[in-house]
Image 1 (cartoon, protein in one colour):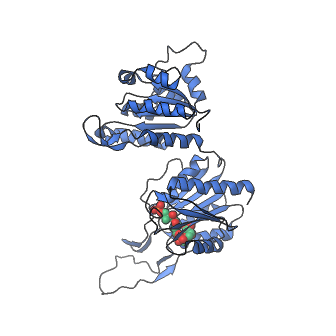
Image 2 (cartoon, helix red, strand yellow):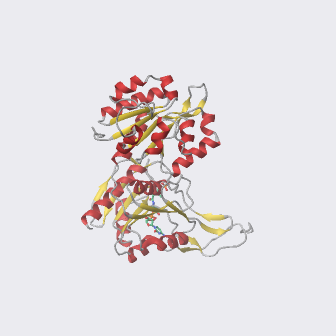
Length: 401
Ligand code: PMT
């Protein structure tokens, strides 16, 4: 009963995948949630409201003007009680209305009235989903912290193949549960996260870099934001999609990353360094493209500053967390880095292990703290790894060390 005491508004629009929201409503009730369904008129042409009423064990809201005898307008009453509004499936129509603050029926009015988190799971024909206006509307929603469970790819009800299928109920349920059960234990804290690779330029067109996609650091930034922190994300040129709700500061080189972090360090409570900072940079920068004149070319490199180490020397009240990317002697090397950089916690990952390290959506880390305690985590999504790291940080803050 992990959703006991949670009040959920389930918005249902007229998508052909509507049968999945019947299943979703039933799963939510089984987990202890109190579910209040709001249907659009188009939704009622596909499924009888009575079906949702029986499953949710609550009246279904269809119309703002014919909804009970209480003095309080029903949409405000629902909005005041809700812990989450989930719209499943969400058509292009409701996405457009929400992005533009339109409130012309029960569901769109509830959507502008709530002051709880909102999740939507769009489902539509692939061309409709790719439509630039629909995409722009979805982007607007993301920028306002609305969680979007992206549609999946496959056979669509309209006969097409492609992206547009409503994602699986399990996936939607997990995201809803995550939103509802994530503690706001970093409220009032300022968190800086570094992510992605750095680029060390040889000439205007060439650089030395590494495989970091930014996914691990972005997951930490997103998790900290969800837990209530004010987050600055200092990112090298990564390929991953940055999270919304955080302040993104883009940098390219290790020197730029150092400058960006020193700029905010004194006002920061927690720093998590997931960036793969280049240890060396070319000694000289050629302002012209280097010509192919010799059979061999030697490029002298010089050491970049160790950002984590310099923060370790400077820190006062801050908690600093690093990562160790290793290919051998994982724990010994990570322990050495923890001490050398005066870190409070280090997440050691063997970047050669299957499912760990660069580019993928998962990681396998061992957390080592300054007291030498080792906690080996199993293969987890980078999102879950991020939360496990923050759990440890919160525990350190609470215990005062
Ligand atoms: O971005 P992804 O594709 O998701 O990949 C994730 C990751 C593998 C990059 C991530 O999990 C990770 O291991 N990040 C740290 C990479 C790294 O540079 O490790 P390191 O062992 O070389 O450095 C140790 C720590 O010192 C790191 O926190 C690093 O940010 C920091 N460092 C390193 C060098 C340097 N000059 N300055 C630093 O601050």
